[in-house]
Amino acid sequence: MKKRVQNGRERDLRNADLEIRRLEPEDAPALVRCVRRCYGGTYLHRDFYDPEAIRSLLQRGLLHSGIALDETGEVVAHLGMLLERVGDRTADMVLGIVDPQYRGQQLILRTGAVVAPEFERLGLIGVYQYATTAHEVSQKLTLATRSVETGMLLGFLPEATTSMQTSSAPPSWRLPAIMLYLPLATAPARTAHVPQRYREVVSDIHARVGLERRLVDGCADLPRRPARLRSMLDTPRARVRIAVAAVGAGLVPEVARRLRDPATRSMQIAQLDLPLSDPGTPAAVEALRELGFFFGGVLPEFCEGDVLRLQSVPSQQVDSTAIALVSQVGKRLLDFVLADREQLELRDCELSDPAGPSCHHQDAR
Ligand SMILES: CC(C)(COP(=O)(O)OP(=O)(O)OC[C@H]1O[C@@H](n2cnc3c(N)ncnc32)[C@H](O)[C@@H]1OP(=O)(O)O)[C@@H](O)C(=O)NCCC(=O)NCCS
Image (tube, rainbow, N blue to C red; front, side, top):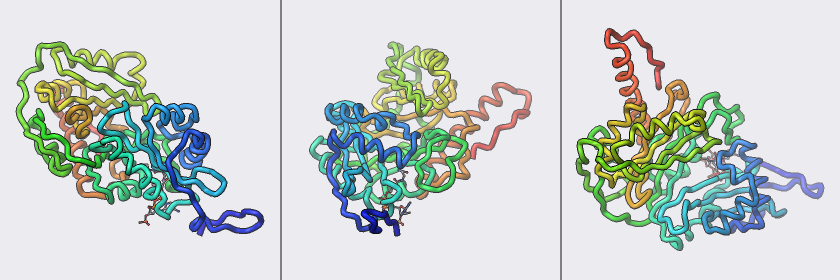
């Protein structure tokens, strides 16, 4: 049992008196100290190392958090919900942490209970979570809610990331994260343009989430209109995310151009979001395979409908034998993602060497 010496007496931290409440701007420095105790300097959302940035997120109504404080006012647990824009109907759950000295007493659930009423107040229909595969704990906790696995992002967590959950050093390769969605209210029924190659996996995700979707074929070719997209660099994660607002004729050369951009070239992984409401999405999926994009997952109701997330991750950065996955669904998603990538690699190999299979693929699994 964890003990702390206080005023010359040992104090039992398991039964410590803790205050559990919403995060307020004045708690920001104590939250930063808690992040440092839990993650050292490796937490990827850098705003959580900057009290001023935390205060700004709170003041703009973007961050809604529950915290636990010890008797000295130190933050010892946090669970937050982060909106991209005020008025959004979906949000990301962020920074689920418990000080190593206070783990194992369901503090994360207790701080989460403070955030839950905010879901209804803000009119959210769902929240996204990205659970690490470094250990099983956060997947187990998330799946104990009504959260559903919707994707597998390879290489999402850089080598140096440490959760300090285990005493072992962080792995020397980039770990995947499992994408989960917690439905909070009934989403509107919608039409989804899903490419044939992903019909089964996407229908399964829709069914598990409980989404009413009519799957229809899209157009055979990319629409003639110009493509609209924006790219966002996530430097701590060495990731570029390209969000496509409208699929159009010049999509593939434009994505290729952005990936060649000097600032983007240093990124190790790429993710590309396509709206399933766009009839051009099935043709875009096929065309983007030329650039090495394969299946990542589905973000239900991400922006006026579901988003299909593709990813491009070099094979040498995955060792799936060392990934912790607690559910059969998670394991099936990983198998699907790896098989989709392998298909791409085999095709590239055949194209580059039509005479025979002389090239050797590193086993992605
Ligand atoms: C994941 C985390 C938030 C869980 O918080 P918590 O309030 O301790 O959770 P619980 O009390 O419900 O315990 C969950 C599991 O943690 C493990 N656990 C229990 N005591 C522990 C301890 N002292 N140290 C480490 N893990 C412990 C157990 O496996 C427990 O499962 P069990 O109850 O079935 O035995 C916390 O361990 C943490 O901050 N980890 C590092 C950061 C991290 O990985 N966050 C999630 C990122 S996706």
